[in-house]
Image 1: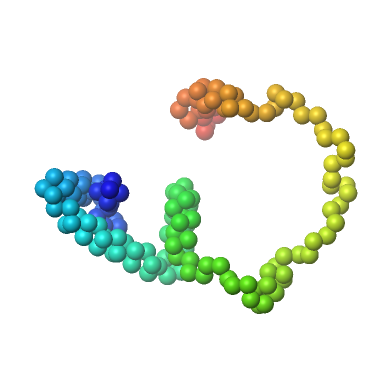
Image 2: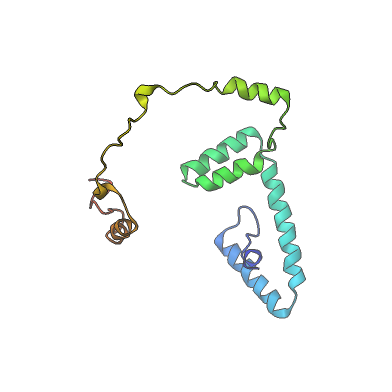
Length: 153
């Protein structure tokens, strides 16, 4: 129910419109006219979905780049997931051949890269535990972090 009450009225709506829409929905809820904002929510959902599905490759690339530059990585990933219509390929012979072409055959590991019988000594002080992380988090203030340095040194 909270998701329906707080739903954006349009794709590019602003905070003032969100407040007006929420007030209207709460008023309808108090008056017992729930079907009205259920219907409005369904119409809004349908409109938002059709807007997202209609992106061409150039629009998708621009939107994806904008989201990544804004640091909204999960939203960018979801956008790609929504736009993707390929899914999982069936295990046909052409798919298997393509996978074999892209992935090299297995081979024996180079012995010089493997560890010998005795693992190296690791000082337990080097491990981060729940308490060391909690203590470091409590010592952070603003953007400086535990080191005391900000972006300008």
